[in-house]
Length: 250
Image (tube, rainbow, N blue to C red; front, side):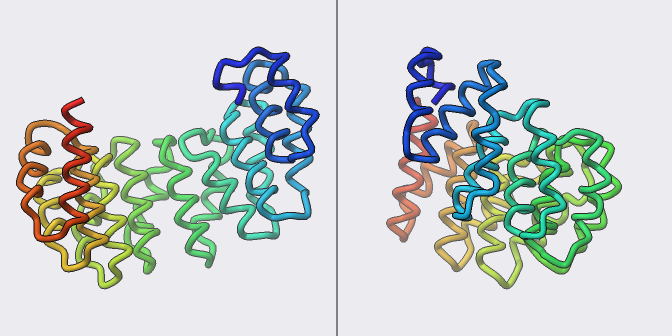
């Protein structure tokens, strides 16, 4: 809300709302404008009796994303509720600071796979975490492996690149689909070949994820692949291909 250009007075009007998410949106917008006194409205919602309100508050802290908000997110790494830990990790993705590493190193070792996955991605902007992430590329959980490989790729490491190909052959189609999707952002060797492999998958979810990834990749090779996909036997693939072509042409 505060990000969309409204004046401070206009945004403050929403602080009077009975709607908790509305107040949080207004408060976080004002904090991002430098009015730190309104942070308390967001912090109060971290103990709201409705879980979704607590998770929304975490999301707004992540959107604020400044040194004012980040310490409150890192405190949640020790929360007793796994969902609170998970959402706090998602909120700091790309914004983690070196002082968070000791806790993040512990979280990539916990039993909860969702938390390991989120902790790996939270490390993606910390090159000093490379050695911590590499062992996760052998994790038993496919999504944890993928998250580690993506995090390493984001920090510019060439470690674990084979993971992308391995997971395109995973027995779980949802893992294959996720592996295909992230190839849109992950610049790995043979990316085009890997995407073509995913486009030949037997499951439509994997194929549509691959089409979207081709569109994200962009460039002449992507254009040619998308043109060919306009003749695909699956309507959903043809639809995604057409949509991505329009996006590329614009």
